[in-house]
Every structure is written in C-alpha cells, then in structure tokens.
Image 1 (cartoon, rainbow, N blue to C red):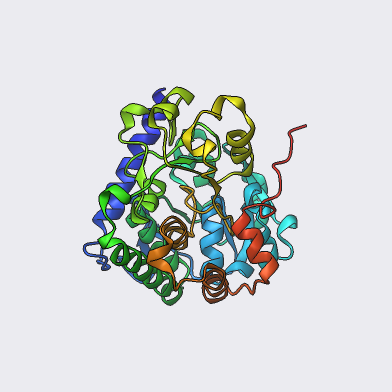
Image 2: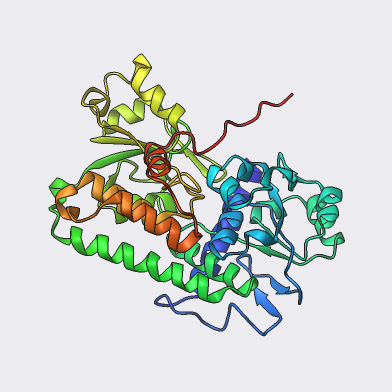
Length: 363
C-alpha cells in the first residue's frame, strides 16, 4: 500500500510539473534550459549527449513516440511489450532481435549496457527502487523520464521527447493535429443535448478495470461527448495507477454502452452469464475499441486524438456524417508514422484483433 501511495504521489508531482511547463499550450523556457541541457517530466535536469544515434525505450509509449519522431532506426533496446505490436514490427523489421533489458519491474543493467545506448527513455516508476536507480546511475548514460497523467501532460511528454531527439518539427506537427482534431470534435458536439449524451463504461484491459477521473483515458471519453460511468475515485479500488470496480457497481451504473480495449474483456462481457443482465449487453451495445500502434483510449496510448474522433463519430454519427474513419486512419498513420496501410489492415485495426501478439507465458 505504501508503494502504491508513493507512485501516486510521484505521478501527481509529474502532472503538476508538466502542466506547469505550459500555459495556453505554448512552450516556456522551463523545458529546455540550454542547447545541451533539458528538464524531463520528473523535473530532472538532463545533460543530453552530443550523439543520439542509439536510444533505449524502456517504456512502450516512448517507443511509439520514437516512431512518431522518425527515430525508429535509432532504437537499440525496448520492452517486450513493444515486440507484440504489429505496426511496430512493420516499422522495425529486426524488432524481435533488439535487447529487452527491462522486465518484471527490473532493469537488466548488463543487457542495457551491452546495447550501448547514447540516451535512455523510461518511466517515473523505474525510479522507485533505490537499488535500480543506483544501477542505472552507475551506467553514466543520460536518461530522460517520460511520464504523463492527463492529455495535456501527454502533449508535454511528446514535446519533451521531440526536444531530446532534435525532432521538434515532427513533434509540433503531431501536436497541431492533436489540438485541431479535439477542437473539431468539441465544436461539432457543442449542440449535442446533455440528455442525448451516452453513458459509457470503459473496460481497460480487464473487465473490472476502468478509468480514474482526471486521467487521459477518462478525458478521451469526455472529449468524445461521453458521460463516463465513473463519477469519482470513491467508486473505485485504486491499485497504484489502476482503478478497479466490482461487477455490482457496473450493474448500479447500468451504462448505455460498454467500450472494451481488449478482445478477451469484450468476450467476457458477451458470454459470461454474470453480465447478461446489463442493458448494454442485452441491447448489443458492447464495442471493441480499435488497436493500432497501441490500444486506443488506453492510458498508455499515443493515438488519443484519433480515439476521440472514432468514439465521437461512432456514438454520434449524425454529427460526423462526412467522416470516413477508414480514410482518417489511413491518413493518420501515413502522415505521422509513415506507415502505408491496406484496407485489410485498417479493418483489423478497427476490429481490434490481430494487432498485438499474445503475451508469452512464463516458463
């Protein structure tokens, strides 16, 4: 319990720091202090190396951002989760052969050193264990902490990685799309009556795991015009960064729709007798969210603006009759990730199946 509280406190500090770096979406000098020094998401001053030809992404999200910033050829170490992503496999043909020096909450310093990165990207949670921190510091390799809680924090994290990798233009292009897409959705839904808004339960990876208020996944649904079934943290059991609810609570909410970002969770809702009494299940209003580079609307997803557009256009089609999601997806991945998708691949993304390999069973 003490560890969970510590992590929440650190993430709160990260959120305050990140949002404090910006005012009205504009950069301030508090992020980059000089040409070779910058401040990361944990408030640390980082001495950037002159050469950044080899980077280690010890947080899956940072691997996705590195691809966004067109630095995939510079990645020399990843986490195993990235190797499960089909689009990452498409972008990095030798992905399976890359070192994976972070597993089960611990960094394999020897394996990381053998990959010879010039710069390391990791999460704030990597710094929780003093022993791990000492080992990391002992490598004398600069590392940048990338962390976020809210959508605004996420934008800051993208900007920070863009600065760390000298890819500011690529970061800003994506951030412009991010802001413009969400603004467009909000503008179109401005006339949507409150009583017409759909109440949604969002299943995050597991049937009974859901959004915590004031977090990215919660805000994605809000931006898409949904009323999240979760009203406050008091309805949840908090475990670190995750929020859990009981089956009984889901029945009390009895939402209009259920959105799941994991096919196994979707299957449970549709086939387990304990959920058959839910109105959304009876009416066939249980939907699988798309999966691209990551699970859309997941707390660790880079595709937040596209998720907002998809959810809004799916739930309120009359407001988005001119939007063709197949073409939106095609343009999105082509423009920002330089991935050319076939109609079949786009159909797989929309279905949310086959885009992530199953987790390997531990021997």
